[in-house]
Image (tube, rainbow, N blue to C red; front, side, top):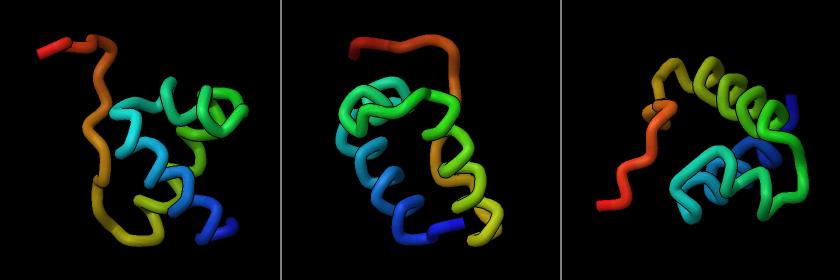
Length: 58
Protein backbone atom coordinates (compact mmCIF):
# COMPACT_ATOMS: atom_id res chain seq x y z
CA UNK A 1 0.00 0.00 0.00
CA UNK A 2 1.27 3.44 -0.91
CA UNK A 3 -0.31 5.67 1.72
CA UNK A 4 0.53 8.89 -0.13
CA UNK A 5 -1.03 7.61 -3.34
CA UNK A 6 -4.12 6.57 -1.38
CA UNK A 7 -4.36 10.02 0.24
CA UNK A 8 -3.92 11.70 -3.15
CA UNK A 9 -6.75 9.55 -4.50
CA UNK A 10 -8.94 10.46 -1.52
CA UNK A 11 -8.32 14.16 -2.13
CA UNK A 12 -9.47 13.72 -5.75
CA UNK A 13 -12.60 11.95 -4.47
CA UNK A 14 -13.39 14.88 -2.21
CA UNK A 15 -12.78 17.37 -5.01
CA UNK A 16 -15.00 15.53 -7.50
CA UNK A 17 -17.52 14.19 -5.00
CA UNK A 18 -17.41 10.65 -6.32
CA UNK A 19 -15.34 7.56 -6.95
CA UNK A 20 -16.14 7.78 -10.67
CA UNK A 21 -15.07 11.41 -10.86
CA UNK A 22 -11.81 10.67 -9.09
CA UNK A 23 -11.14 7.73 -11.39
CA UNK A 24 -11.74 9.90 -14.46
CA UNK A 25 -9.49 12.67 -13.16
CA UNK A 26 -6.72 10.24 -12.19
CA UNK A 27 -7.05 8.17 -15.36
CA UNK A 28 -7.56 4.88 -13.51
CA UNK A 29 -10.38 2.36 -13.16
CA UNK A 30 -13.08 2.89 -10.52
CA UNK A 31 -11.99 -0.37 -8.91
CA UNK A 32 -8.51 1.11 -8.35
CA UNK A 33 -9.99 4.15 -6.59
CA UNK A 34 -12.24 1.90 -4.49
CA UNK A 35 -9.31 -0.30 -3.47
CA UNK A 36 -7.16 2.70 -2.52
CA UNK A 37 -9.99 4.13 -0.45
CA UNK A 38 -10.54 0.83 1.32
CA UNK A 39 -6.81 0.56 2.11
CA UNK A 40 -6.75 4.08 3.52
CA UNK A 41 -9.89 3.49 5.59
CA UNK A 42 -8.45 0.24 6.93
CA UNK A 43 -5.21 1.96 7.86
CA UNK A 44 -7.04 4.78 9.65
CA UNK A 45 -9.76 2.57 11.12
CA UNK A 46 -12.55 4.89 9.97
CA UNK A 47 -14.97 5.28 7.09
CA UNK A 48 -13.97 8.32 5.04
CA UNK A 49 -16.51 8.34 2.23
CA UNK A 50 -20.22 7.49 2.12
CA UNK A 51 -20.78 5.05 -0.71
CA UNK A 52 -24.06 5.05 -2.59
CA UNK A 53 -25.27 3.92 -6.00
CA UNK A 54 -27.36 7.05 -6.44
CA UNK A 55 -26.27 10.60 -7.08
CA UNK A 56 -28.43 13.42 -5.77
CA UNK A 57 -27.76 16.56 -7.82
CA UNK A 58 -28.85 18.88 -4.97
